Length: 143
Image (cartoon, one colour):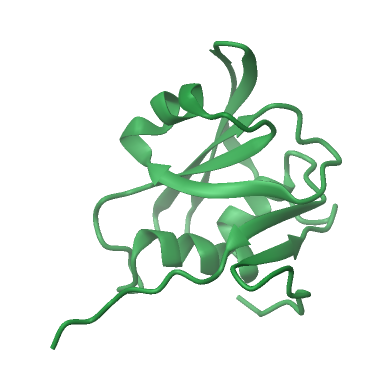
């Protein structure tokens, strides 16, 4: 993975620009009814790490700019998608188990979006031009 030069968006969020050339092979792409919203449940597989990534795309994100991305518990992805107040939005399914890099699932997903990773290419494959992710997640350490 290589870092991309991304402009700072605010003190607490970062805009991540996506290129059309970035795309993943989706192993799942299904329309899901979610009340008033339309949604797509998508998934991709990172063969190198033997990991699947799951996302719920709420609303029309094709050619969208500054689409909000947030992580939710993978098992509650559809429930949280039904509760969402904003559209369009992208929910990334997070596992409760520690990630392969030793960081939290949210930090791992953030790094996947800011670097060339499977989550970034999965989201780019649905036609999004840019997303906004939180970049100031501070975890406290008690000595």
